[in-house]
Image (tube, rainbow, N blue to C red; front, side):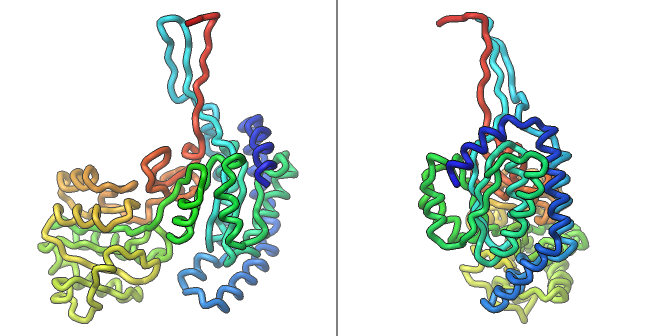
Length: 408
């Protein structure tokens, strides 16, 4: 598979933007046509997942329905409309000796995506890598193996009808753990690995990989309600950040509340969160205002729940909030709610996270919401890619130098 991917990558690099977009539209049509087959496969995965005791949040990540399949197809179509970064001139200059230098975006080459649970990742990863001229080897989790096979088959069938090079998109048909170790050692054939899943999977890939890895370990996201926070806005943003989709990496996990704002905001906010079924865990000061909540432990501040659970801490001010986030956070996404512009700008400068927001729900840390199209994932690394990763983050660059006989 690695050898075939490398050969396919060289052929992909020769496709024009128009050819790639035509292939993507054909893929989208094939996903719509295959919807009944994909739903049948997904039903098998859901049955197996229920039997294995997967949580409600995990089952929701796994579940497909006609609306979600249409969203997958629409996402593929959207990628076809996005500007192609390949060939973009990032910079250009001329040296005194007449040599002309361009820095140009080019495909990375061959990329392995290792992921769990969410079958939509099969399409997202494949089409974003394809648009940027990268060949892809996909290795999904056992929870979604039937769904992944059906989606990959639709992409391959639709793509082939429009000129997709053979082996440009490959799905490992098994889910044994050994395949992860084999992929991680294939530095001759793979230029990059992107793991998407739980912390255990990502740590395993990082420990074994002989090529670069782009990843994030956790999504321990914070919302800080400043003294100058508008109460109605604070409640709306906290409820949305926590409950809109609790099983994803940009969901709120810890709420920090300025001591002066807490008496006004916390009681109605707690009621709104309880109405959504959220279990609240609080520090000692929080429990003096919300007496019936669960005591928060030290472990809660560094836990990614991925469920309807929220830890709450009252802080003395923005200094404490920033210090807490930089200590316990995962450098993913953190937001401040305040009408104090100076406080907001300080928060944006000093919180060391890939995404820092002012008066915005943490749920907007997403490639689609940033206008990138379907994202390949979120990176908390600081080299090459950080935050939501779209098309540009799936390219590298080369220097193209032109002259007329210059020698050194």
